[in-house]
Length: 312
Image 1 (cartoon, rainbow, N blue to C red):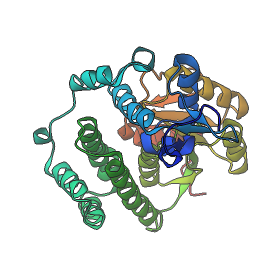
Image 2 (cartoon, one colour):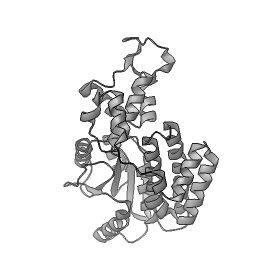
Image 3 (cartoon, rainbow, N blue to C red):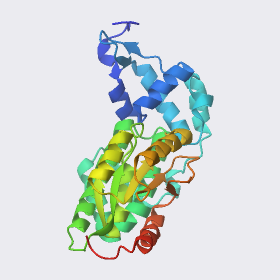
């Protein structure tokens, strides 16, 4: 092992493990390492990156700050005490200001009650319906959980528990809606994210909204190479490529990828981008949707343009 760790190697994490733990894409970690000198991983005998525990803790702090609007160039490489002080000034909602459902979610996460959490989320989606669960309630719950994590009230594994249970319930509700006997018709929508984007929740919420509009949907999951997205679009005769970008993806990087994808797919295939990526703006060749509620009128407008009113 090069740049040897003086501590037990069991405390080291692979780049894939750090990506899952911190919610930071592998490419982001590599760019920060090259550009800012942090993180500074060790290397094993295969020259694979290994991250000490203290660096992982710092990366968690950085992720909180980036999601709160801080630019990586201003915070990456700064001491933990500085990062912690900055976090104290991050405007996150207090528990008292959130709804009763969010309070229940945080309580169940605090007691590690995975079964109770899933039962609560199932009850919410049955009561509110798939559209409200995906477009209104879900983002609010995710924001409350993220805010609690930013305040240090939840550990990363508790945030992961919420994401997993929320995703399971949402996926089940999507499958139920798809099997409800409603006719599926164009547009045929292909869902994915770019390789730098590991976050799937926003993509799944978008899929729910397209499903409610009776669209034909095909999901590739997350982190699909751009040429493969283009190949899948051709293979599945996609009308729309729906892509999600979180706040962890720099806008220039997202726009560059969208521009590359635009050049690889036919002009009649529309590219729709959404998510919380700050600075992502529509350009010639792709559309940007800031709100999930904009999907329904967007689909209606597409059908008007394409004259696609019959099932396919």
